[in-house]
Image (cartoon, rainbow, N blue to C red; front, side, top):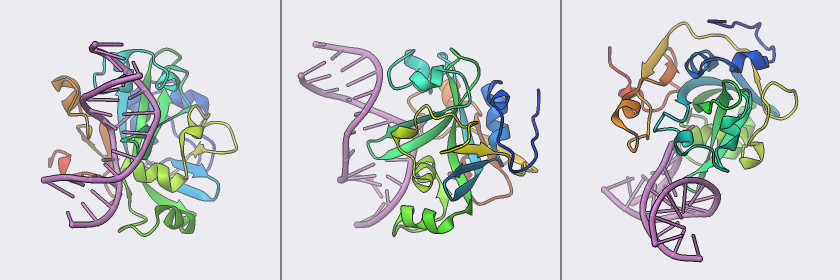
Length: 205
DNA sequence: TCTACGATCTTT
DNA sequence: AAGATCGTAGAT
């Protein structure tokens, strides 16, 4: 169970998600999100876990908004951020754990014309670095909240090529959290790609 | 009810 | 460096 590898193009099974959020986060790198004709390769993620994580939406316990996060892993948790951007999370762990992985950046694999159309006339229209851009490229809104990613139809996760090396650093935009959680190294990115936000905030090593 | 504030992105 | 823009959560 430590590492799960699937043949490329296969739907990722439910069991993949029912593991510690940090493992799932790392192994989501390289996997493919499918929605309609659009296919994106996940290049950057962040893990958020449990009621103890003061950076997580679950820090206040069960609420109406975070309900999907508390359910069984393998579903989407989509919410509106700053009143403007939809953010896509993938719920992990068993029912009641309250952990999820934020999808922060992706590289377009297919359906680029659709992505460009959805992005509009902004600079770097296909540079999907940042969670708001990812959800926009996939055409997601809150109607995808609670959607199961291991069932066919709609938004799906399928196996892609695993990365050869991974960057690890602190999460972005969680200044409000307690120091331990603010500084926790729970952001992961594929090293050999430019599809990563805030690259400078990884330890220079 | 009321109020403050975001797991952000874009332009200035 | 700041504005856009609104749902959520905690306070009243």
